[in-house]
Amino acid sequence: MAKNMQPYLKRCRTLGISPAVMGVNKSSNRNPGPQRRMKKSEYALQLTEKQKVKFVYGVLEKQFRAYYEKAARMKGNTGDELMTMLERRLDNVVFRLGLASTRREARQLVNHGHFTVNGKRVNIPSYLVRQNDVIAVCDKSRSSAKFKKLVENDRFQPAPKWLEKSKNAPLEGKVIAMPAREDIDFDVAVNLIVELYSK
Image (cartoon, rainbow, N blue to C red; front, side, top):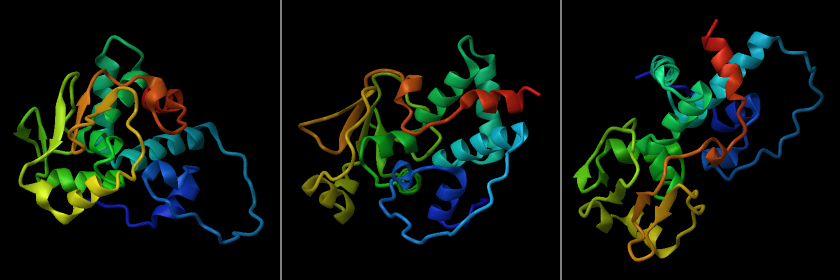
């Protein structure tokens, strides 16, 4: 599978994303010195927004275009539908519930079959959750050091309003609504992505 091996912080700086959005708490103290700021063309702005969203959700071009085409066929606003689909990905939901420290880690955990949706094991990171779906850590995985540590110190961010973390079962969460445009945890001009693909 194709992978972008460029360092996280460098990629974040290039795309103008806070590392916190990626679940990374590091910050670069290095002073890059004076930089020439060139005015970006309209195409460059559109491309940057697309690359930003692809990088945040860890989606490759072919899959991203498939999401766009599916969103374009839906009745609502294409940009909003696109972002809603990306938010509904199982790896993103695992990250947003605080069951993984980064989306990259969440994707790996899902791939390894550590999670269930409505009691059935799902190992497809791109699986789209629906309203009332219950996402939980598998019974076998609960005894692992990683998830034990997670229960001991719940150090990750609170879940967004469209997700509900179970108070009685810390390794479980529920989709109580579909994500809305304002639930996205980073700034993105999604209209520029729509303009790029609709040319």
